[in-house]
Length: 267
Ligand SMILES: NC(=O)c1ccc[n+]([C@@H]2O[C@H](COP(=O)([O-])OP(=O)(O)OC[C@H]3O[C@@H](n4cnc5c(N)ncnc54)[C@H](OP(=O)(O)O)[C@@H]3O)[C@@H](O)[C@H]2O)c1
Image (cartoon, rainbow, N blue to C red; front, side):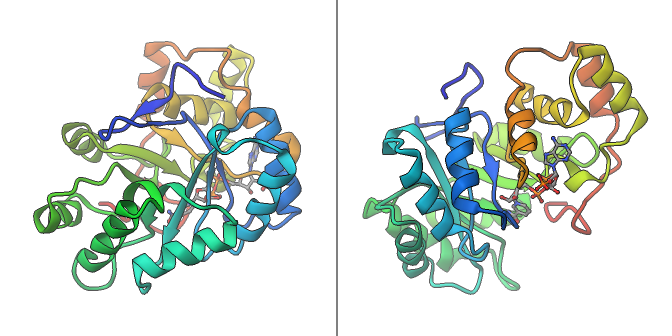
């Protein structure tokens, strides 16, 4: 579903305002994806190491949606040959191209320059429309740009009111890099926060919906994951309300550099 919140990338292409995450989407992956596409989700996030690509491919088929109706994001691993891994991911998904291919995380040494050149080649050959990174710090992105002149379209990082970085947002805005928010629901760890619960009551929404909407209003694309259909439905019902500016500020100030996965890797 196209919305006024869709995000324009520096390449001129548009990315949906939100998507469905699929890490540990183990329950009936194909049915869940078909269900999400029917609901109106148009972006799906996966990775070569999630094990969900075959199920996603099957779910897309079951949905009957034409290729132009969904935006597929996947990732190559830091130990991969990026060009070959792109082909392998597409084969698993039974797709001939991705919309966005990311480096999942920087390798132990260097910034992943060889991976980045592999993705540039994959894009030149039409295997993906756009390329980007995930879990990158600003200096590591700078190194990729220095090496190739190619600016990533996206940095996919952990991002929620409880854990985010104004410095990273400034950097991304300056470079024209869009942020995708992973673990936008804090993997459930902060859904019982009192401020959040109080504010959710004010808008007649749930804490999860508020966390998702905060990202959308900041032009950051959240990727909430949901095995439960009721969750997938609830998470998509975020386009019929607006968080007031003052309340956006209250949510911003919940920042405690929280990470559901141990630490914010971009800091
Ligand atoms: N690039 C990376 O390194 C990286 C790292 C982590 C994640 N990701 C991506 O980001 C996606 C999302 O992150 P995540 O899966 O870590 O965490 P998340 O989306 O913050 O949280 C998922 C958890 O929240 C639950 N949930 C979903 N909707 C809910 C709702 N409305 N109310 C209450 N609970 C709800 C889910 O339960 P059910 O599943 O039972 O419905 C699941 O346990 C991943 O699936 C993946 O695609 C990327």
